[in-house]
Each structure stands twice: as structure tokens, then as C-alpha cells.
Length: 184
Image (cartoon, rainbow, N blue to C red; front, side, top):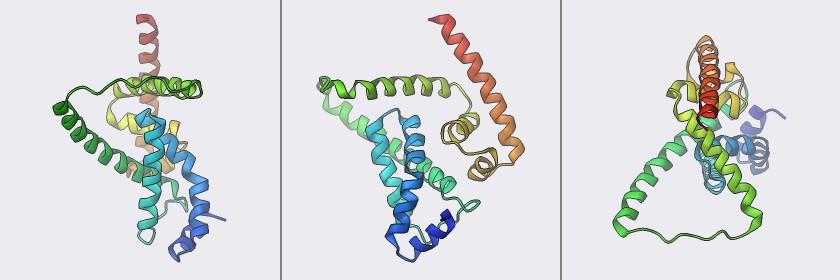
């Protein structure tokens, strides 16, 4: 069943249809959020917020190419920005309270997740060196798997602009990666 049909049913209150949309797109939304935050637990929480927002606004959503994914990713971007603003104020409050105690490593089973977070942070550091418009293309096309046409719709820019930004982003990332290896 297409996203458009599932969304229509969800608007009519059919929770199973919305559940099918969640099953279809939750991993892509989670990966998008995780790559921006480099924290698996925060990514899980924010993915839930994205779908909660989608459920609440399901009657207002306009799908792109009969796919819910571009709308969900754009919503994820807004949720992330709101979360960053909240975290900024939390950090200010924590600084007023003094340093927090270090938490010990709880188990070997999370070691792999920690390594994933380190790698994601390293990649985020590389991406932060790109201009925002190129960073958005990398996040949507390379990390979230949107094609150039869907990314153009999600960003509300022409397809040719997406392709040129994608090309420039690839070259800059290659150059940054090579420069980083030389410094190591």
C-alpha cells in the first residue's frame, strides 16, 4: 500500500495504517536524527517526537511524490532545532549548578553503540566544516537516502541546485578527509 493510501487511512483515524507508516519510515528518521546528534538514546526519543507530531498533524500533512518521508525528515529537522534550543538553556542552568559527576561505563553491550557515537561525532565534525546548504544535502541524500528530486522538494530548491551542492559537498568532504588523515 502506498504512503498516500496509508496516510489517508491514518487521517480517518486508522491507527494500524499509521503504524505501517511508522514501520516503513522510522529507521530512516532515526538514522537522520542519530547522524545529526551522534547519540542513539536522544535519536530514539526525538524519532518518537517526530511521529507524535505527525500523528497530531496528520490531517494537515501534504505528501511529496506520495511519500511521507520528505515531510517526516523536514519535521525531524524542526524537532532537532527545538531540542538544541532547549539543550542550550539546560546547559546554562547546569553551569549555574556546578559540575556533574562522571558516570561509569555500565556494560560491555553498549561498547559498540559508544563506538558508533564516536564515529558519528567525527563525521559531524567533518560536516560542520561544510556550509549549511551543502551539509543539508549530505544529510538528506547520503544519510537519509532521498534522491535529488525529493531533496529538492524537502529543501524547496531547484533540482539543479541540489545536484551542484551535492557535487561540491563530495569534493569538500574528500579534501577534508584527506587533510585529516595527513594531520593524524
